[in-house]
Picture 1 (cartoon, one colour):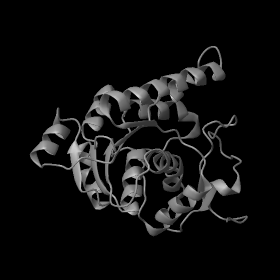
Picture 2: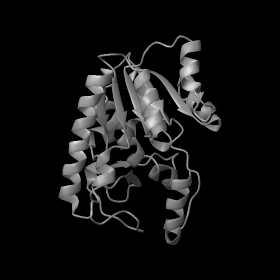
Picture 3: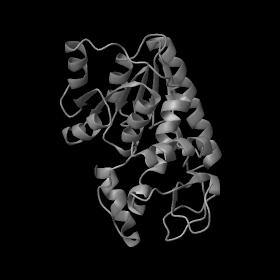
Picture 4: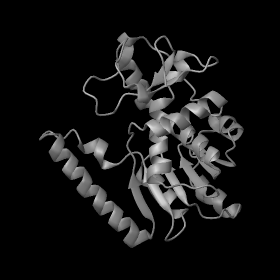
Length: 252
């Protein structure tokens, strides 16, 4: 647990009505962990939301187990970095797509194969040239039709699980007719895609959304304390410049 006066880091629930863009925020103690002495507050703040999202995708939805092969599309992103770290800690063999500037960092984390997704057909050609075995789990942090097709193509038939971070819930929950209507539409689309994926491609289909998880936070804190999980911070902006932060995130 944590005590008064501790330096802590944590995440706010994605459904909270209060948000987190503030100098101070209230959070339940179980959603926090002590910040290690060698981690700055800025670096710590970048970890929990991304790591909890990755945990949800890899462990809860993907059901990854030790010894399995995991493919992370968008491995250079915050969530992709966390998914790769969590998979390696679990004992999985990991491959990832990313921009070339992220290759060294991912390899230092133990990612075995890294492919430059900016090169057309690079994933398919690399997999075929090097005779890659099929993957058990694919975590798609990019979420385009192209990455979905590429990931599913590389999965084990019958046993493979595809997990996207860009499902319909996040897109439709803000329906102009209200959250309930948006959620109903989202779950209808999810059920359809899940059925079609199994019927047409013979692989599992899941969508992952970040969720508060005290048990996961304990494991994430362990990896952070061990130095095995870090999320690179690109730029630090003042609170008054939050609009520019969204612009930077959108533009990559």
